[in-house]
Image (cartoon, rainbow, N blue to C red):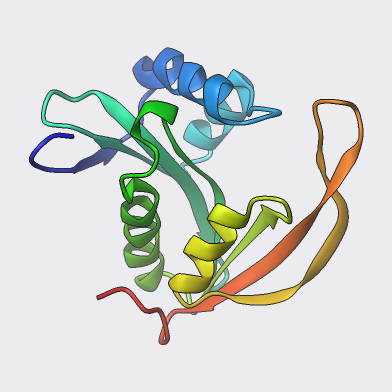
Length: 156
């Protein structure tokens, strides 16, 4: 891992690399159109890069009417286990604090690593959205709805 972590805005020129990371890390993955839509809509689309501008992960969210929503957060497989997800989440929280009172997200109920990350940052479970996520086999998986009150996050 590089000596420093850098954040920068995602651009259309980054799309091929981001989609490759997504296809390797998420099932089912976001499509190129999902990323383009987020960029076109002015969402918070941020990349985590090393000192050579290699993309290690990304976070996408938006804010509206006093609420922020985390849409996706992904760390490239070869960089997982290095606390980069926490760095991306903290970056999203810091952005959200300026625009919202609450940050919301959905997470697959089977994604215990992500659930632990969110609980460790101070998110609370609000409920379950039944059959929310599509699965590669054609089935559906429940999502846990979580929220973080901007006054009570636990990042140091």
